[in-house]
Length: 296
Image (cartoon, rainbow, N blue to C red; front, side):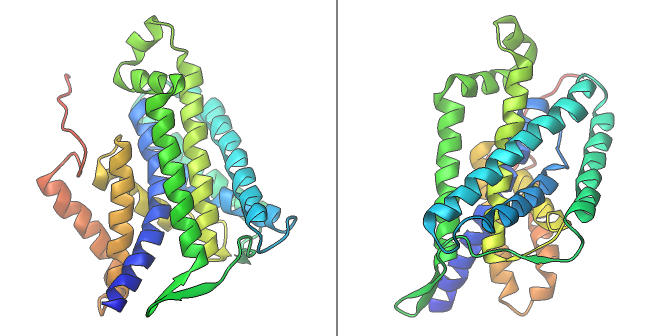
């Protein structure tokens, strides 16, 4: 029982990070109907911003960790809006394939620029939050895991409030439903899309910092696999559905952790993708997604 609870805690911690990244994928898809493949590399940039800021604030302090988190989120929000303005906005209305190729190009640009500016050698992320282990019976709980779960939960709640309780959130949902109709009633499409990219990129940055707390070795290619897993989580929960992305991330992280602790650990990635295939066979729209009919 203790081992089960331990693995469950580890899985929720990893799943919370996947959920934060998946939310960025699903928000952009919900508004623009395309996958931003550069999103995983924004996650990497967030980790490196946290790395450099972390060396200029007191380590092992709560406020120092919050400063690192805030600066990384702000920096990546700005990066996301710049990417949208320079790379994606000129292609708005173009063929979907053109946008996808551009997204892959931006992803490669960030990865190789990271190797030029940050170096290809892995770096050790500083201990920005107080780090300790404490026990609950026979269960060993890391303070970093608590921080990851608490911060991720708070950010998901804030996102839900923004989307469903604010004016810009209403505009986002209107653009997602019908961009032309939203524009006719006075919604500024450019502002809404730019805000969506900024918000999604900020969540990816938070995921990058939280990921680096538990897996402190960072490098310019670190976003490839977590980004792919987060994309799987978004599709698993229902691409375009915010609660679905969160659920998919938590589910995928938990399954991956349990598999990693079993005799099938070498197949953990294959099993994760197999679960996606199996679920989509029975629910093509994802766990919480809703099937829609498109006119052609």
